[in-house]
Length: 369
Image (spheres, helix red, strand yellow):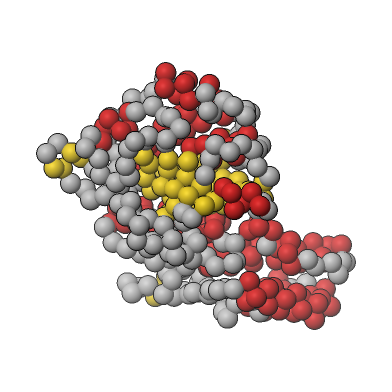
């Protein structure tokens, strides 16, 4: 790909633009002297710390945003509960494998490897996980690993507990007894298990899956992934970005999973609150998941614009940027109106996407249907 984004691809984007009829924006839903702006609902920016749960934070951010758009109300969901569900499934699979092959091998890092670079939970797999386990309000269960030390301590506790109980596990044929041991193992990393079977959210007692479906209105089938690779970028990227514009214009946010640079390249590509593009390929060092909340064209602005339809219909150029709700806390960044108020929003150059694909990286857009 190399040079295509800078010349060839941009000119093809300019030559062929999908016509969108709705207005773009992020700001208040008002009509003033013919200026229409569209609001993408957002809850507060959070900090995933060092645990590597960006995929859980992004999924929750999308769900919270859609809930706020539909109801006008904020909701605060537990990201760590989703991480717990994934961790539990991975741990149980590893335990089952050890029992099957009479093995003592147990690498706790393997259990958490998806959080450390794979895109496997960057999109639809996370939503499928939520479909299986449900959602928990933050007020009902919240376990935060604030530092790498806390996370490593928890991982070591589970590993130690696993070896202590290895022989007991081998002798357990009863499913109920096995599950009891499994719960002890899992609870060694967290103070308690999320209350999946019963909790009261203020309007009645229910399970986590009932809460997700009946209160939040969550369905995994309400979301769709569009995957972009170097091999399909010339045909797939332009319509995907146009769909991002259209989705934002409708008031919905869009999830994005994207490859990240490793080593020294990270400091060159992520500067302050911006993912910098146009530098060229970079060494891949994992993936990161965020939520797109707005966009701007070259010489344009984030937030309310004089002519929203014109901004939506403009072709792409090297000045095009996305605004992202990140999960790295609120130490730096913009708010949704483009003001520097340290709320944890980041900007991404369109060139960063091009460089990612040039590096044989991956971009996944997760759209609400």
